[in-house]
Image 1 (cartoon, helix red, strand yellow):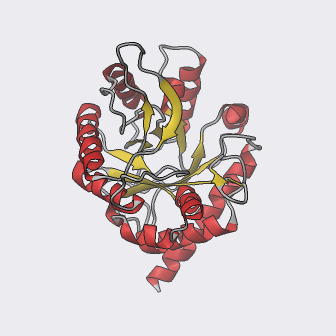
Image 2 (tube, one colour):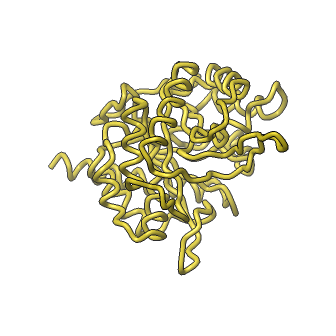
Image 3 (cartoon, one colour):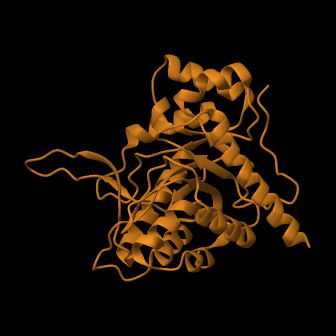
Amino acid sequence: MRPTSRLKPGAIPRLGLPDLGCGVGLRVPHYAHIFEAWPKTDFFEIISENFLVDGGRPLDNLAQTLERYPVVQHGVSLGIGASTPLDWRYLERLRALTRVTKTPWVTDHLCWTRTPATDTTRSVDLHDLLPLPYTEEAVRHVAGRVRQVQDFLELPVGLENTSSYMTFRDSTMTEWEFLSAVVEEANCGILLDVNNVYVSAYNHGFSARDYLDAIPHDRVIQIHLAGHTNKGAYILDTHSDFVIDEVWSLYRYACSQLGPVTTLIEWDDEIPDFSVVRAEARKAEIIRDEVERERAA
């Protein structure tokens, strides 16, 4: 039977949500190994859009996974910051999937993904996580949409900080001030991508630790860790390599500030054997345990 989510010893509920431990993303290259060996992992995270289908093998694979593991849903198409109307058809399908997975929350990115329609052009999904200006107007716009989505899904929503490669002249606050303002006004959670904090800090020259200090800690419901590609003058968030030492150090600092939080290893390109990804999750487990012992002492 599928295990139920439970608070681990010493865990702190965030928005009434549990700490699920350390998990990995459910990816197609690993299916054969997972369904044969049933390896140890605390949970899997799925990309919701991969399972918004009426039937077939994707849902069969998901059903097998749910028999043994908790599953959380992470999306890439919500476009919460877009100026286009919310896609209620997409949200209906997303809600139906949450009833299958029993996910404790749903996450997506603090960004926009779709262009508005005009008299001569149709709305287009650009399939990218595009940045927002950090303004009070944008805070109100995004927060209002998040409240609608949470009410419709009847689940907490967590917004992920994206990697940043540009800034807007119109911005009137920092990224962490913007993120904090949105989640407080929307009364939602944060999916804190520690790698993205590092990438954006590198690209724009701010302090990653200042970022972690400033956000509302009690709203962080999940953490992402991933590898990236350093181009010298800038970093690309590629999810194609090991987590680097500097990001592990930043994760350790985050744990010291936040306490234990559900943590996921993302590896979405040049995906290695499952054992390699699971070993990265094990590193996160070790850091969490070490920090908790230090906090207790």
